[in-house]
Length: 193
Image 1 (cartoon, helix red, strand yellow):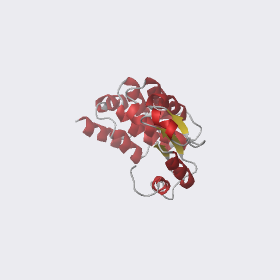
Image 2 (cartoon, rainbow, N blue to C red):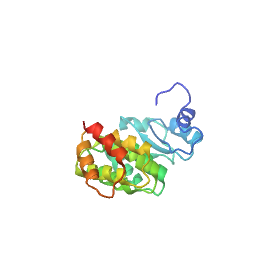
Image 3 (cartoon, rainbow, N blue to C red):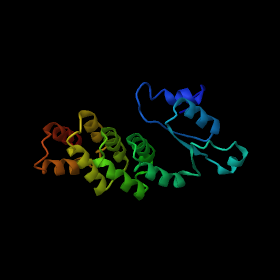
Image 4 (cartoon, helix red, strand yellow):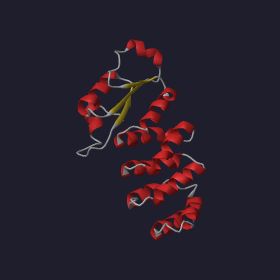
């Protein structure tokens, strides 16, 4: 998010009138305060590219999670994936997404969410799993596809993540006698080629 306007309204704008969860990472304490003023329930992270500059800045606000680098952020993101709030889990997946292929702890924490009671978390997970590979990723995507509450939006998210695994997922679902979504099987077959 790069903007010439105040940070708070810019952070609030993607939420709109919905209760959509927001996570925001910034290196400027004043931007975190502005974000908090406009979206009090946002998950805020204070992360600086060069920690030697931290002593030259005002301290980060108490409500911000302070991380020294992405390596130290990973356990905090992993913890957020287990949070009681579905909104926090959803945003944690967004933060974890580009790091899933490199971080086994994040992958393990993420794939558990294939059974999450929140459809929004499963929807985000279907998108996020496209960033990683492996049999556990295939199993999680199959679980999401077979979930009785998987809607067309989640199916589309899932299809966006199966570029490398569509054949494996198609075979597993086709061999599952309890899976009855022929339309999704057809769409997977089209992706598989």
